[in-house]
Image 1 (tube, helix red, strand yellow):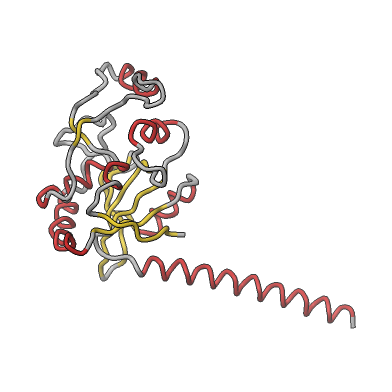
Image 2: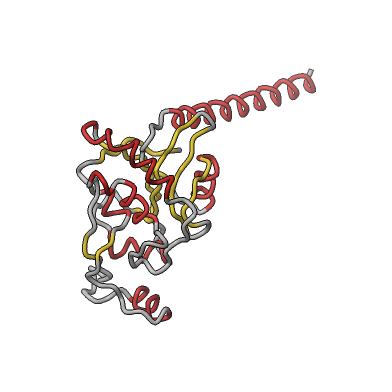
Length: 219
């Protein structure tokens, strides 16, 4: 009798684990299928390194702390994220691979959506985004026409309809009132002057736009 009970208990535990896995995957797939063309995916910032340095000088809201952004494109052949990243430059990446990359880095993905009155901008924005694929990543974070960084890629995507705007960049640590040490060393190594006050954009600035609404977190 005991061996039978043990076997039944094992089967019940195995079934419960399998059911939980199916339930989680079903919820995740449901979330992804609920995405719309033109949705913007914001990736949460880390606390250290380049990610932390970006966030230190750009964070605008307590509940919004981001260091990367991409735009969703849904088609017959799948769901993709168009974005500019250090690895691969401006690219069209499958959603599952994009989410896997963020998960491996311990970062979360938040979905923002253009408010209804701005949705008409999406078709031309996606067309523009596709036309920019293949360009290298802009590691200097100083605007040019031959390479793009993540928020720069998205701002250009919607530039024709003025959804976002370029603003004077700052590299000042708000806690000290001085140039953030990371950025000072970063540009010193490149033999470049810190581009304080030059036009640019960043994920936190884009997330603060009144033309967007926060929809959900992709889990």
